[in-house]
Image 1 (cartoon, rainbow, N blue to C red):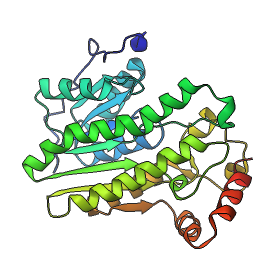
Image 2 (image 1 turned 135 degrees about the vertical axis):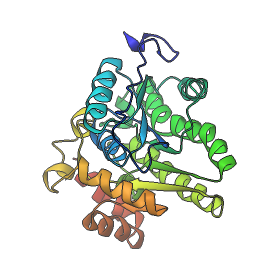
Image 3 (image 1 turned 90 degrees about the vertical axis):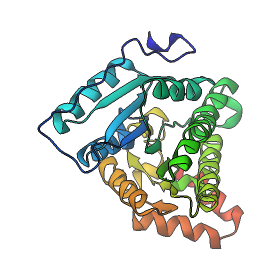
Image 4 (image 1 turned 90 degrees about the horizontal axis):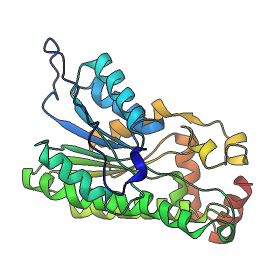
Length: 283
């Protein structure tokens, strides 16, 4: 299995050469995307590829990565590189960075999209699962940003997109750790965006609401009121919203006006009420 080792697996890495007959505006630029084989990450990969970017795709399953890389390259003709890596491993970010540098690839855009959630009461979930969630949703995101950011600053050019969530705007009983990690991602992204003003590098936090990505089934919240009372957005639409905001250098974008209304309304309600409503929607 590709994920049996703590180190990144690169033996099956494959670079699919672009077709010489196709010319793109961004043909010499590269976007690195984590969580790239499904949901929002997959749709972002297609959007960036369509717009002429070469790609480095990161996900756990090497076979699915190979299939995804071949599919996107065949459709758009870009150079697609992929690295199978389990971001729950503490050294994964450093190994990814070293592998990219060894290949001589310059990352112009970093998309920290990988993440997962666990549904259930905090006390009933194994501590190891909680720590894996924090590692993927927070630690890997911070590490990858820290590794690739100095190179962008040296060039005085670059963009970073961090996938947060509307979960970032309130506590989430029954998904306490997931909601807290997304609050971290939002706060971190906003602070970093401010630090980097005038540097040529921008940071954008994408905050989707309920979205059809497969996440809802994996986290077991697909039957909660959050997904049954509100019509989820499709991943393609959310990805396009994120891409547009990133290109404009917006610090934060909430996908969908209804989600934005709900997210910002939380700021004017008592925290106890916000928490009770959040708990109700997750039941």
